Image (cartoon, rainbow, N blue to C red; front, side):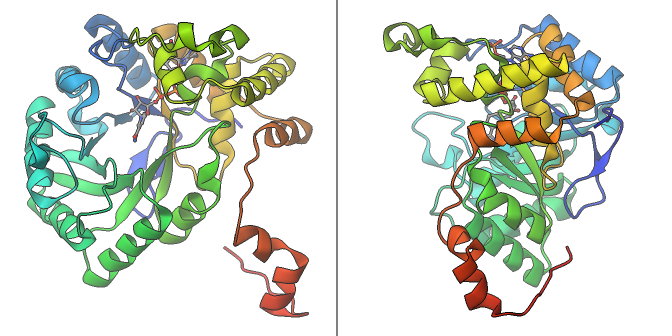
Length: 354
Ligand SMILES: NC(=O)c1ccc[n+]([C@@H]2O[C@H](COP(=O)([O-])OP(=O)(O)OC[C@H]3O[C@@H](n4cnc5c(N)ncnc54)[C@H](OP(=O)(O)O)[C@@H]3O)[C@@H](O)[C@H]2O)c1
């Protein structure tokens, strides 16, 4: 594989051109304990843009609003050349039920807040951040479409939702002539491959580009953690570091460190870093448009951008696959079995060409 940040790709079924790696801005600001100060964040932004990157990912509440505010400052001179993606639904004010959630009131208020924080007249890509299992989807889709018609949002998308609901929403949007969802942002990496069951195949079928987040599983795939970090007393100390966050999320486990070991072995064989191998692997899935890089320092960003040049041998890919595979479960296992195929098609040979 040899890509560059200016090897642009179309995002899902849209005509929007985006870089094959997005720049994650959840590390812009230190309010969450592990991010970058303003000047360091500026360097991350400048380096990414100088290399041809145009796809920036944030959310209304990242680092308590600092991420969007810093982006508003950094994009003052080149706003139009960038694809700014942000998200809504997370609670903006404690104990105020309508300051969060996917419903129309919060959708409109949150977009106004993001426009103010980013000092811009429009958002290129707006994601529903976290599905709540309660808001009627027609209310969400109609609200998103209204914002598109007003020109405040150009494209809409979704993150953290079950495949059955996204697929249903896309069908409703299509039938009503509302703006379709053009991207699906999901956690996808060598430690979390659950998206391969339904989310990624659904996205390919319905025209959503897959945007993997946490491509390095919060840093676990970079090889920076050891078995000593599995000790709760140390790692879960709640000291606000990325390590204690990873531990609290359940990402620091023996299984996951064993996957990181294989990533390290492959990286050594290729003369690459584990971060480059982990990121490059996410780019191989044909449903993936652009993973979101989560660098905290310029050195990490430069390292991660090297993923665009990594190529694997078939043997290396099988080792990574064997270490990280997830069972697809029912009905996929049944449908792929000899019995399932015989039930579906008898002796006929039918090939879908997509
Ligand atoms: N839609 C959602 O719900 C959602 C959720 C999460 C993230 N996101 C998006 O995805 C972006 C990336 O997520 P993420 O931060 O979880 O990504 P990640 O790449 O899995 O983890 C990033 C962390 O790993 C470490 N790291 C990164 N590159 C490294 C390198 N080359 N060498 C050593 N350590 C390295 C850094 O932590 P330390 O140096 O502190 O160890 C960094 O903060 C976010 O900025 C955000 O835009 C979206």
